[in-house]
Length: 324
Image (cartoon, rainbow, N blue to C red):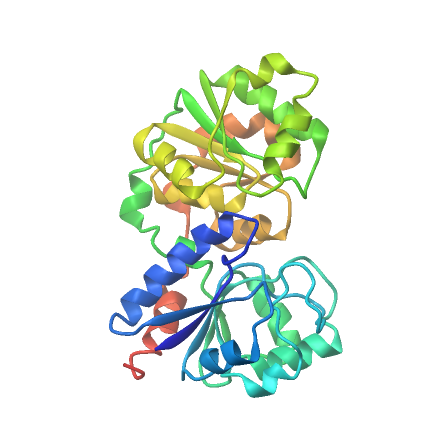
């Protein structure tokens, strides 16, 4: 058995489910005859549960923006909920596409100590972007390579070549409740209604639907023209799989899910995650100031130009051949 720290369990963001889908798929391919015992990162574990998690020789952390500049024994939102002393007790963990949560100065002393001891010194760590490599290096963790998020690993050149190069009549969009810009987000809604015959909204985060309703409280005529999908991943998957749609929105992994399903996607950057993955891998990302150009940029974007670090991904995977 191997331990898998599950960053989607208890999460309020369905994007974490998209990430964990990819993580589990890759681990199943690497370790087909091994049970993956999953333990949540967002909530404290009991002593008995920790003993089970630490009884295995290998422990992986499923990628998301889990890493941060500080460490608190009473975990803040989405911090890995382990006390400092557990760093010396646990099976040292291996990162798998994990990222730094935000742009920040040099990590605090406690964070540096925790990561140096909680993370494996034997195995290479896989992280989401070059910025996370830099931050871990500041913590004294040097055995780390930039592989991108596991959600990108399946974007083969063949798959990317099959993404349509023409505009669809339908679009699905997202907004982000904790990165609000009411003026720009409302502009996006009106813009999409103007450019598409059919508009769908997918609430990826727990607060997105309430934010959407508040945006349109003074514009009931707009809300009647937008179809709201269910707040679950299957609703989004079904739309992408069975209808020809474009994706435009602020949720990064909704955009990646669209690419996985061979749909055109334009991600609107609202934080470091999308911006860093644009820099590193040429993902289709624009800034909020470019919303009024999103359709034309989507028409012009060459999806075959998305460049993944295949060598680093293979390097990270191949190190576990000896474990088998």
